Image (cartoon, rainbow, N blue to C red):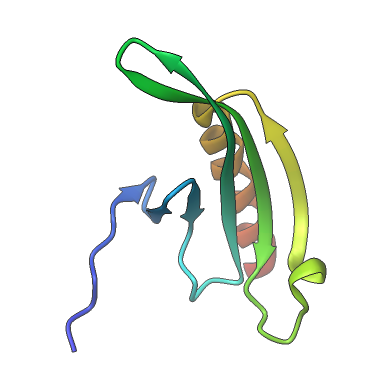
Length: 97
């Protein structure tokens, strides 16, 4: 079975389904979940102006609520992806130390 190729951001998969984005590899100990909470019209498209960011453990033995390690809300998708990248890098580095 062929492995699906996903869009990569800083070497990690970035997958979107509707207004939810997942950043990171599910094989790693942590991933990031971003949910676009609201959008504003700009030119001919909608732009996210409220994005929830969560650092989540991929441990299948944890309940969904206990799997959330960190969470924040950002004012744009750019700011959300920026903090997501930092959180994920640090969490994976600490997990491998």
